[in-house]
Length: 97
Image (cartoon, rainbow, N blue to C red; front, side, top):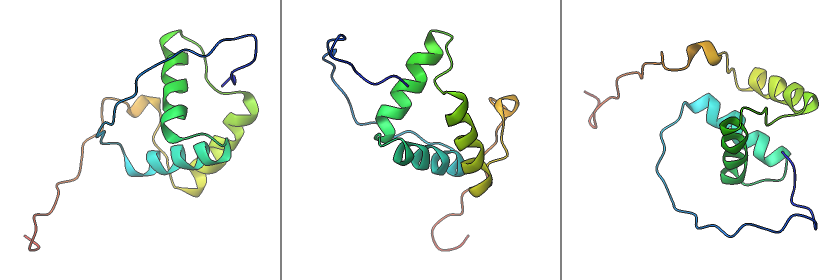
């Protein structure tokens, strides 16, 4: 993702806190990638989504290689083909039932 340059004025925005549920291993990869790129998780997600909205890839070939390593480290085998076909495990109720 491109960093802000002096030629590009910053866009003023308002951010909100949100509670988003996300697959555990996917979140681990995203957090590790954000740390690797010295970004907050929110900044990383905003960049990914803004690129996707324009049909652009948010990652360089080098970053894609880094992501592949992180996917292996965290056991993330899901792919785009799995999107919209994920089912969540039943959550156990408090008290072990």
